Amino acid sequence: MDVVDRSSHSTTLTGWREWVSLPDVGVPWIKAKIDTGARSSSLHAQHIREFDRDGEPWVRFDVRPWQGAHELVPVELPVFDRRDVRSSSGHAQRRVVVLLDLLLVGRRVTAEVTLSNRAEMGFRMLIGREALRQGFVIDPARSFLGGKAPKDFRRRNRGAAPVA
Image (cartoon, rainbow, N blue to C red):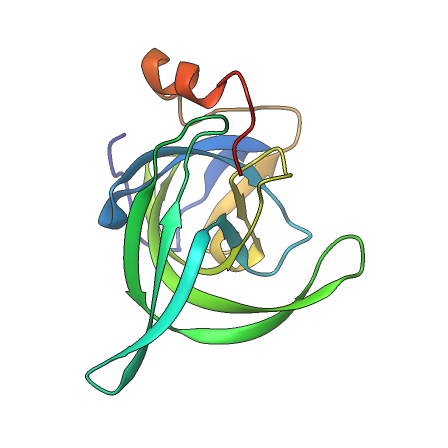
């Protein structure tokens, strides 16, 4: 993916689902649902552990970018916030929030991302309004306007058996 523009003054068309990259944490591809009903973005994270680094709150977690795969990407980031988030089913949960740069349809933006267990969800990541208001317009009839991940990554995402 080429980075086109980081400013919020342009508008970039995105579909209702896209392949996204998290370049600063070593996740080259993850399938994301574009969700205007969610304020924050959300990432499937496992083994979430908070700790202090030089007196500041940090979090260590693993990302499993592909459904059905056993690969984990270890990540450590400063804690940006903690929020009560209500799911679409009405269940409230306190979540850790981190700031993550993501590449969405060729644009690099910084998003507030909550960490949660999305093992039962169809997408490992949701992109919410806070990230989308940085210059994105959504066409709900289209998908993957930023292109698709290479075939080998897409095959990994279709793994045979679901893994949490």
